[in-house]
Amino acid sequence: MTLHDELREAEALLDRLEERSGAKPDSVTEDTPRNEDISPDVILVGIVGGTGVGKSSLVNALAGRKVTMTGARRPTTDRIVPYVHADHERLLQGVPALRPYLSTAPGIHDVETIRSLVLLDLPDMDGLIGRHADVVEAALPFLDIVIWMTSLTKYADRLFSDWMKRHSRTLDPSNLFFVLNKVDEISEPDPVRAASRLEEAFRARVTEVIQPLFSSFDVRDSCFTLSALHPEAAIPGNDFSTFKAALFRERTAREIQRIKSSNRIALARNRMSRAQARLKIEERAREIAKERAATRKDLISALNDSRMRHALESKLGRRRLVDSLTRDIYRRTLASWPVLPKFAFLLSPIASLAGNLRRLRHLTPGIDGGAPPSNEPLDALLTPLLFERRRRRSLVPAPCLAPVPTQLADLDGPMRRLESKIEAIVSPDSLADSPASRPSRARKVMIWGIILWFPLIQPLLEEILDPDGGTASLAVRLSWRLIRMTGAAHLLVSAAFVALVLLIILGFLRALAAKEARRRVLDAIRQQEFQEDVLRELESVVAPELGLEDNKLAEDRTLLDDIARRLRAMEEAIAP
Image 1 (cartoon, helix red, strand yellow):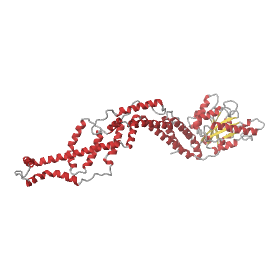
Image 2: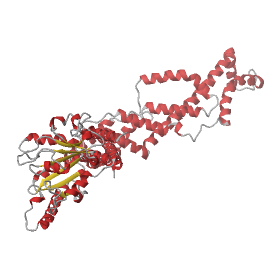
Image 3: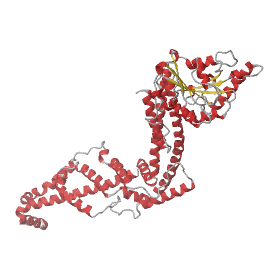
Image 4: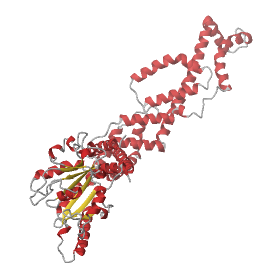
């Protein structure tokens, strides 16, 4: 990816950032002309200044011949007059945005050392014709280097400071030259001392204007005093040769790339700084933290109320959650008993039907084992907290935050998330280090004794007891007669009795599982870590706008960091 493409991407991100800050995007679009649209290896140098400061004379002096008109008539230049190498004669004609403003008589040269430079003599900035200022504004997006030119009588004018303030955000100070012309007009007895004082005064004036805009920039190497009319004359203070050498020095491809990109990078960084100031990120973060701390304090105080705790536990311990956990614990318990899992499987259709009938009754008792839920619903207990937030905001405004909502957010979503967390905490699957135990010997004896008791009782009674004799008790004789009366149905009666006993055992185990499920849910709700989750979810109900503000703040920070990283990388890529 080229540097040009990286700049385009950074500017697109800046557009998004400015839209998020509520400002109109300050960048140009894909269709807007840029200096890269002319040529990647040509540097455009614009000479900017007021009326009569000698801009055209400077172009002629740099060219070594007359390229543009000079004279007492003002303004002399009303179009852009380029001084360009013969190879680039038609270069600017290919730019539609500049074509209407170009002079029909450009200056052409064949000096190879300055082949990559195009000098532009621009109209006066302070002329009476408003169109001239429009011409300069149209040319500015294409300029890589700007020469601000003034004279002995105008260097202290407000035009310089006003223009720099207006355009500083689009300029890299290292691409600026400041020229004081007409030192040949010094008329003092000691011209050397006068020229020295003038240089110091001019440098002080430039520093005064530039320092507030570019605090770390040293203007000493960018300020020149000269005589454009007598460029080669040995006049005190005439630094034309030094200025020409600095401007016309041969530049590497890397230097050209740096010059062409640095102005746009400077503009991008300026836009980022202004968007960051509008977004008020640190102020928003402080207000969010302050509002969240106050809301959490209110919630903690409310959760200390028994009514709130009971309502929350009823809401979280609804029958669905307890039943689900009960089934898990019940299945795990059955695995430690012989025969019972298979017996429970045979009874599963009946159990499923009973469960469906119970659900049809719409009973949702809380986790207290059957007591109805709290008479006061949770949202009714949370509403006063919302009113307290509105009252507090009216007393202590938070201008960076959205207004406090007039009603609570939906409770269902937060409650579902909390139920899911409870299930993750209390689920037997979360206790992987406690595998189900194998059936113990006592349980095997108990179950198999029940199953085999009746098939063996009849033969034992027949062999040991004589029902007709007197040796047997009345109860035994009556039992024996009952068994004989059943005849072939004896085994069925035995099986029914065994099934009844096993069913009682299953019911007992189910009750124990339900009790354990309720205990686990209560323990999970009262865990400190889960209480933090409760506070977080209830905060999303009482103060939903804080979550939205947090997300926006995180997105703004991420976008700012991305833009800053891209600009840093580009600055490092073009660093000398």
